[in-house]
Image (tube, rainbow, N blue to C red):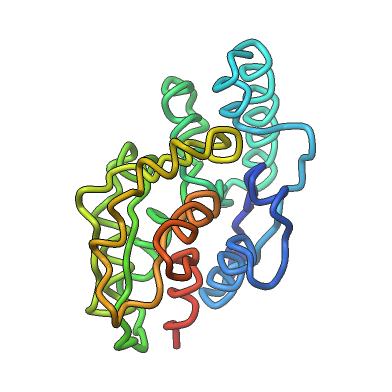
Length: 232
């Protein structure tokens, strides 16, 4: 029997915000383990998708970082032809897809939402009756994976509220730290979408969750927390 292996690459934001039992990385690992995957976490301290450097105008550095990362991924695939590479952060995966569209390695690289959408189609969930607010972040929209994210949320609960007027949370990578007014302005109407009996919100990026929680007045978590919670 061929061992099912997933190589998981955590984002820079995830590393900065620390890995613990409640982190998005941890929940993705636990979900994959429930699906009988062996998970190998790729710990590369100096390489990344390049998005953060690109956003600051350091295009050459961004390209160098991304090329190093993809070279490493190619070595992983050569060593294990059946391996899957997951990049934890959908913004990172969109950056790689958009900048490396001609690179054949991208066919072996996935974001967790689209990967779990396929893996969990026939999986029986223990549905929750709680009402949740779901934020579909920009990179998921850019990847055209809205349907998949919404499907996974509905696998967990029928009570899903989407604040349709809020297309972007305004955190914009790291800009939510340096320019908090962007985040505040983007979310100025979010409370209008939240009924009194809705106490939790979910998204798939930890940086988005920071701003959403601050301006919504409710707790925000990674959608992977809810998925793991509802898996039997």
